[in-house]
Each structure stands twice: as C-alpha cells, then as structure tokens.
Amino acid sequence: MSDTSHDPLAPGSLTGRTALVTGSSRGIGAATVDLLARAGADVVVNYRAKAPRAEKVVAAAEAQGVEAIAVQADLTDPDSVAALFASAQERFGGVDILVMNASGGMESGMGEDYAMRLNRDAQVALLDAAVPALNPGARVVFVTSHQAHFIRTTPTLPEYEAVALSKRAGEDALRERIPQLAERGVELVVVSGDMIEGTITATLLERASPGALSSRRESAGRLYNVEEFALEVALAAVEPVPADSTRLVGDVSGFVAGTAAGADA
Image 1 (cartoon, rainbow, N blue to C red):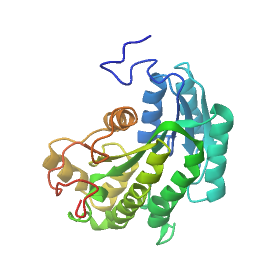
Image 2 (cartoon, rainbow, N blue to C red):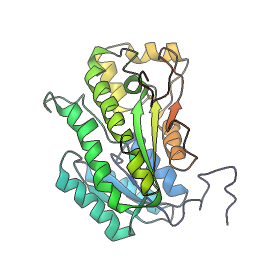
Image 3 (cartoon, rainbow, N blue to C red):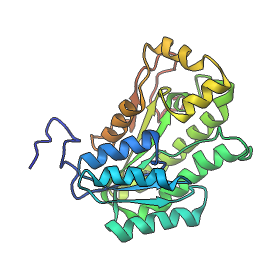
C-alpha cells in the first residue's frame, strides 16, 4: 500500500472511490479529474455540449488505470441531471466525491436570469439529485470565487456582478443543506479562489473590462493557474473540512475577511 501520510492525493490513495466532477471537459474541472484519477479514483466526467473534449479527459483518466465515463448533462435540466446520477450509480454503485465545478452566467444570449438559474437554482437541484447517489462519508465540493464569496462586502466588476451575486446565492443555499447532509454522513466544503489564469471566466472578464486581469494580478502579487487551483479543489475533496467549511485559495487582499457562514462574509 502506498504511503499517503504526507500526500492525500498519492497514487492509490483514492482507489475504490468514485468522483463526479461537473463541467469537467476542460479547464479546472478537467484538471481536477486528472488529479483524482491519478490518486486512483474512478471518475465521471460531466459535460454540457463538447463530447469529443470530454472523451479526451476520459481517455487520460483511463490511462491512469482507473475506470471513467463521460456523461452529458445540462445542469439546468432536471431530467438531464437525474440521468447523470443514474449513470454514475449504474456504473459505479454510488459517488464518494462530488465536485460542483460547472458555473457560468457571462455567456451571451442566455437570458437575464441565466446566471441565477445556473449558479443557484441548478446547483441546489444538483445537490438534491445527488444525495441518493452519495455514499456514506461522501464529500461535496462547491467551487466559487472570491469575487462571489465576498460580494456582500466587496464590490466586483460591474460585468461580473450578476454572476457573483448568483454564485453567492448558490453558496448560501447549499450551506443551508449542511445539517441534512450531515445526517447522511456527507460533508460540504466551499473552495473560493481569486481570478484564475487561463480560465474562460478570466478571458471573458478581460474582454469585458480590459486590464482587469493584470490589475488583479498586480494587486495580489500573483494569480493561480488552472492546474494550481485544481490541486486545491482536489485537496478539498480529501483533506479535513475547515472549521467554517471554507477553503480560501490565494491572496484575499482587497477583499473583506470573514468566515463564509457569517452574516457579512
């Protein structure tokens, strides 16, 4: 057996466990899948529209010696979400790690309420649909941003405000489920990060507000890249849950400090 005492993601440390990562055909989701697969977890790769891209992530996971499947699901479609977890249960019997990575809201032509439907309503519905498939001792990881996590006390770019408010609303709604999850032996961790180099969101923000990324990079000193942030997400799935269920990644200068569960966090 591998010695995992100093590396919770060491090869073999997650053997026999199953992880499902939403929005994992690219970016942070795909990098998280890779890390969990390297640690021995079987994986469910969720994607909305790009099947070939998802299949590449599956192939890379299988190259690590684990089982992997790609399942299409639009998180705003309840039937699609139900089918996602049905596929996971049919193939693997249940889910031990659920990473709620998929989000959005800056896309054009999706309707004024799309951000709230995706980042709050769909996330709550996703968790509710997941509960029957979650094994005892399972961990749920919700991925968010400092711009959303601290939106109550720290303004963000106008172009991102609707997304930030919707993601914070989603976080709050998920936190309300913590007592119910605890009754089933399931834990929730919120991972909040600064702007991440190389993500679609960072690209869209820079396009909408030129200089936004460089300005934040200068203020923070450095920004995490996709692989670095994915490592923090993967670690949140296996390390002890912080006292306030929040893992803050990277610099928080410019944001108002406080616990996520607090009224002003």
